[in-house]
Image (cartoon, rainbow, N blue to C red; front, side, top):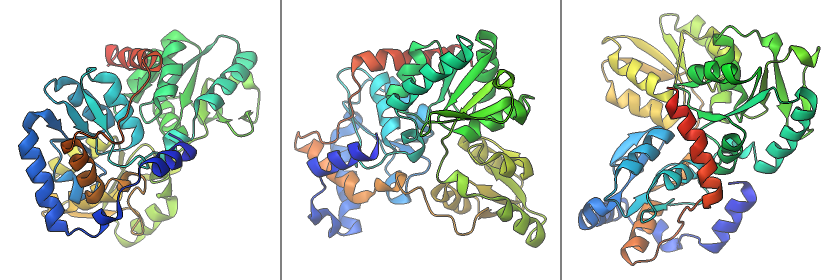
Length: 369
């Protein structure tokens, strides 16, 4: 969902001002009351990056694909109130049954990374890249992408990837074609390809705004084409953050998400998906010290959940993901109260034509991991 779409949705259905003045205790009790009343007819998945005021009501917490898959197995739930961002709710809608309604409490909860690759840019890029490289490219897209991009990848023989299985999927992709177009996060694509032994010199960046390949050298040498997109949160972890920490707290282990830049990942001690970070911290010995390069809500939660360890954010001035934080307690209460009235607001629906192709991309991934 791009900015114009979000503004359009916002103007159509804005949360009443009265929700901003209700007390925290009143809203908390209301959510509990509605959850108890609806029982298994209501299901609330919550992404790891959500605020504590929201995540406390989640029936399951996890990453985007995990939550969508969990929703798909819950056939009893009539209403799935997805506490995450738009592309995650899209995936949930595509994987759930027709009788299930997926609701996003605030339509402004988008993802800046997903918005960096829209379908018009991608189709234009594909035409240019086919002219340059002929039929030698397989498209892969990070699950942090719109349904339309997933559908484009599915249509063109490619698959989705997660930060956990990106290496496996790149290996699979190279068995299909000579080159890969990796959407929409250049850093995950670069870090994964580099880990597989592909030199940086064989990677180029596609700029969707200029519709040009950014590369110095012979294009024939390029085997990985990285879309010029990034996560606005993870890109804020810097080499300077690491250098400062090495000087001031040299005994700390640095662990970062592979959506960080290649320079940051290279200087860190460990890197991995959100699940990998959580599992690593939970299994770490008591007294161990960690600096984490990922979203602040999750870092703060890990600090609380692991009081026997010293944990800090790699960037002490990091803010939580702004779009993810659109989902707050007032919006959750509003969406649930409207469901209680029989009025479904902010329902996420993906057209069947797009859904079928996008699910094909997801299924190709699940077949090979």
